[in-house]
Image 1 (cartoon, rainbow, N blue to C red):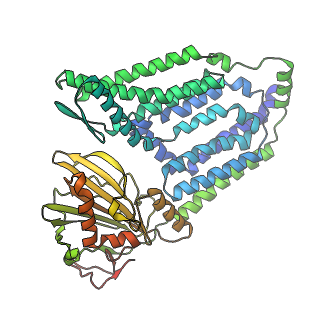
Image 2: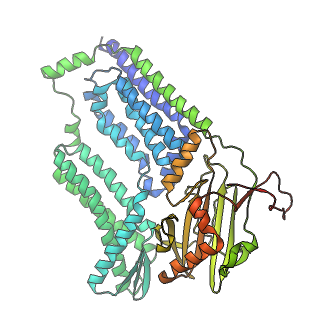
Length: 539
């Protein structure tokens, strides 16, 4: 008799599971992009474990869930509408973080819409834990590099070892250290936070213990990474750079951080309120539970459950279709980037032509046109890189991890940031700045994003304006302008850059935006030496 009465409950759970699977099919590109990040990035490899852990927590909680009623909820549809619009925003702006977050947000929305509020409330932790699947945390790399380098330098100095600290570079007698991205500790921090959240949600019941332990899960890996870097410097120094300067420093760091994580787990065991079995024990057979179970075993109404699942999938299909249609890239005009020899003006800068083998060059491979030129004045050489996009869309974005301004020499990035030299005044926008380091010394790279009506260093602004253009059914043209110079000292940076911008006319482009006279569009270019002087400039 119970099996017969429970049959509609099984159907409701099956409908929810099928809806989640169909959701993965509708958004398969977003799902696969997330899976590829898990597989290819050691920082986010833990994402492969999150869904199985969440499913295990749900299975372990099945006796408690069996005592809860199933009833479709209107609020789940509201949640799903928000998730659908968020996914649309992320997909059209080509911001994976937003689209990945929205995809995961669909799952608790489906549970709430199909199985109802009591079920969703009981599953709040397993469903919330799914958000650790989202590859998230790159924004912390540069700040953690700064923090690690700064406090490592302080500890080394307190030890009595002379040290020179600039950006992410540490120089002591006998050698130089660079706090690279892998040394920032982001991977260890994310792993500790994910583990800390799991422990706090399963072993700790008191809210203050959860807050304390999550705080430890954030603070301990950051402090431990500084201690690890400090230890590596000490080992290298006192061994005359025979140890901790190659692959072995990665091994030392791994062993140390594993020991720190073990201490964190032991602290959780000491703080625990309950064991996992007690946490997910079946409900007691008291009168309240009996009444609840009686209510739960009433036949759930499958009609609104099926309607909720259908509406959820229609929402998903609707935003998927709209995004696919809106992101169709318009046929790009035939363009050529134009920098005539006489354009350098009266400032004493000489146009040397296109970059040659061995010169610094940028690489925006999806651009409609890209070029690197070289200018010189005395002993100073400036390289100018431009890449133009007549329109943007999937796999063709001006802001993408695929784009490269480091150059073919595989230089180390020792500083990133946004700068606005004093001479720029209110009319010129700030510049993105990268400081690169290699065997031949340092190189500076300033770069801006040029839009039809302005220029900016703000990536978010470029993304939002491109998104707005797509919503209006218009093109989203953009251009990157990067200026690079080797070996400049801090005292020379502002003066040389000011002189170069004014002499070449780039300052006018930065003031007003637009692509003229750098980008020439014409109906046909024939031959290698096609004349672009009669072509129309793109403004």
